[in-house]
Image (cartoon, rainbow, N blue to C red; front, top):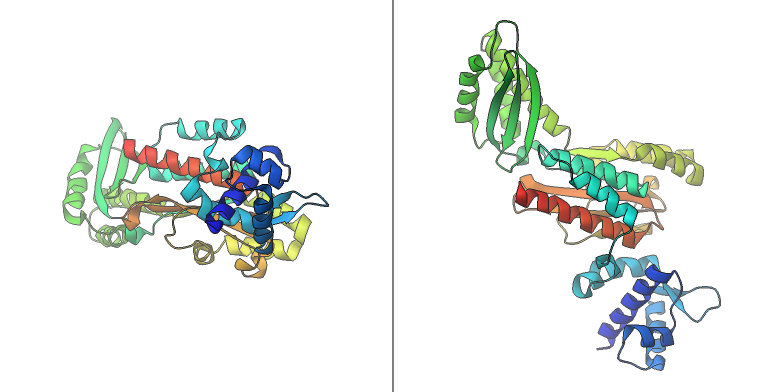
Amino acid sequence: MSLERQDQILKAIIDAYQRTGEPSGSKFLKDNYHISASPATIRNDMAKLEKQHLIEKQHSSSGRIPTEAGYRYYLNHIVPQMGGYIDLEMAAEDQKRLHEIFSQPYLGLAEVIHRSTVGLAELTHYVAISVAPALADYHFASYRLVPLMEQQGVLFLITVEGVIESQFIHFPADAKADQFEEVVTWVNDSLVGESLSNVFMALNQFTTEENQEQTFIYSFMNRLITKLSSHQIEVHGKTSFLSYLANRQGIHQAIAFDQLLNSREQLVQLMPAEKIGIQFRMGDEVVGDAMREMTIASQLVVDNDSPGKRVTLALIGPENMSYVRTAQLFKAVKHEINRYLENY
């Protein structure tokens, strides 16, 4: 019971601090958060939490405020069991921006992930990263060629996982969409179910064997796969954060961090593999000079059983980033993305 009460006390301290910005004392917690213990017992539990470095005194006040470790414990362990401040209404500015992101029509998952990543960077002024599945995790369903006018059309790539990419086409002189329909149908029948990496290689092979008109449509098919692959990892908000980093911690760390952001392999390694909830790593937990005095928050926002539908979002910011606001944003974005997928 003592450990559960300590969790309740830590939850109350953090929730109160998010509302008021003030430290909490034992009498305040007893009166406002209905903790079933005397003020003396609450003070004793607060001392234990302080020894665990989950809370700390602020100046000479007898009240306590949360530490970074306390925030992380709260977000990763307490909120999933008890709920917390992040379940309350978000700031009006955050709500407005998220509404703008998700009120617009989309052509596919790649676009909604792109706009989510851009929106997170704009709202937080941190570096926002999205990591989508590799081409080998996507499986080909079909191409669709839709004529618009006599010499124009749109080619759609659709995957088994429900991801869609599109490309506007201007047909060669004296050619029309129906001249390419037979090729599209043949590709659909021949390659359905294959990974997109295999489809890409097959289409490259076809272009060396067929006539000019068929090569034209094959090249656009592969262009769509290349377009999808460009969404596998996106980084936004880099410029402003690098400026902040150079001013605060020096040009050498800013250069090292920039190099890390340009390496897909290193970025993917920063993301915890398939873990539930929002993961925060900070301080000594994030190794390497490039991440010194930083925090990375990440969440699997699309966690479908299929690897081709797993998408991770991350924010990299200063070690004292706004943890609860970050968690609120992740929670809201995950909800909206999955609502989009359900209605798609």
